[in-house]
Length: 222
Image 1 (cartoon, helix red, strand yellow):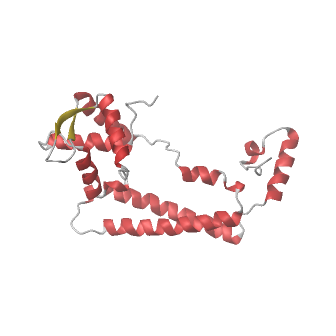
Image 2: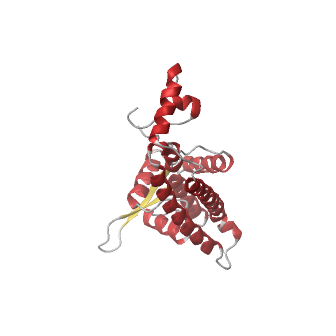
Image 3: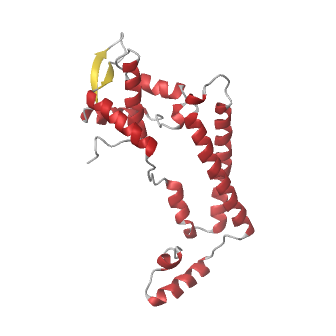
């Protein structure tokens, strides 16, 4: 069963926006406005609000955890009912706890890319090279978009800090991917099924898994 108090970037954003609404006298906010504010401010670079269903699921989870509450339900004309939410006292305390912990404590998030890198011997080197070249192009385009946002006139640095962090992490990943591409092209990083089978045979002779000794996978089917 999912922990209703589990922190996520989307849950943190919802509590933050409701706290902002409270601070500036609005008192409450409905999900559509949350989504629009996140996008309008460019925060969708760090908070995934592309699927409104995910936002509604997160709001429902926070409501069940008593971190937010229904403030009012309204309807304009023939439009569907619109529910506005507000923070509860427990929600304010949880938001502060989440914020302080997220700022201070590095966490392991286990993204897919490092996991895929860990298993690349299962694919032919040329196929890995082609995919990393595609990733390089996409990262380059992403970096250009970030640079464009950072160069906007009149925006205080306070409101660009998350973009600066994205710029740093994306730039570092791009440089690393470029170095791996260079070594794959030069044959510095190379493997073949015969090499992996030979390694598996040699290292299993003493009863130990080759991955334990060398961090290298044996071919599929071994």
